[in-house]
Length: 419
Image (cartoon, rainbow, N blue to C red; front, side):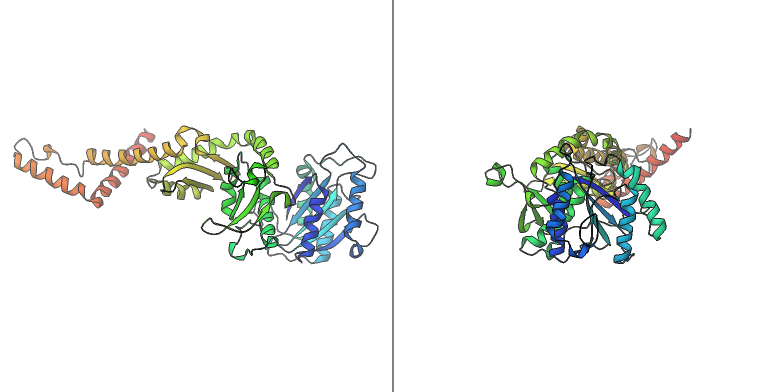
């Protein structure tokens, strides 16, 4: 089971998010606590007023609404009664047993999961501290519930639920489907990854067929400081209706993103070296002789390389998305040697070095006058030279020379290490 706990400043946004799922038949309300009516008789006003009453008791606290999701393995099929019981036990273990809360079962993903909406403001106006609640309470509760209900543990496994790219073919030209698809992706990406600009964020989102778009510099959206989210097809073309950032429940507006940009600047610095090491290691491999080969090698290390190219296909920029550390870096941010221009030069030099040295120094292929002794005729030497020229003009023989040199170089390197 995976438990995710988030605080939010907007009660209405969180409540509307779950209530809209009800209207779309993508969720149902299965349990409630602390309300004056039974769950099946609760209306939207009953829910909203109860939470607002609690929140009004504390004016100093900014983040009063708590949104929790409990996610189960796709192979598990807990029924409504079990889900309600799990939610009840979890809320008790994290200290929210006396708080009003609503439990929604959602059907909008491949794995079973529930959402819990509550408030951290008590009846006496004091607040439940949210700092480190995951480490101090939620993690312990998760492990105890997994054991009690014999659930698959989240710890030590791959992510129980994977975030998949939006299926552009299913997007209709109506905001309902588009908005739901975009919201599901943003809900995870915006808080998990470290990005410091809109292009860096889009380097991640494009992997999920989504684009954060300010419009052209002369557009009304751009001049008003607005932002919309678009779905992309397999060719990167915008399709479907754009969705305003302000219309999405967690408000991923430009203002919100600019705050995240500032927060992430410091947080992602400590992950630079891992990325530099991975790139240097990839370049040292004999199989890395082009940008495409570099991309393939880094993909195995969970690093995505996003190429920025002009209309003529010339690469003018590189962005690295490290899915291990959840950080995004432009090549130049890592240092000059990792910029698009310098990286291509490094690849070119490595190619030239390997080919030139192998042709000039390989004792198996390079012609030498000592092979004929002092009595060799000029004609014999000239004949050997012509033969060498003919051989090295052939791509296959040049590749063979390169391969032999690399084997010798590795052998000499191993000897030096053991001396």
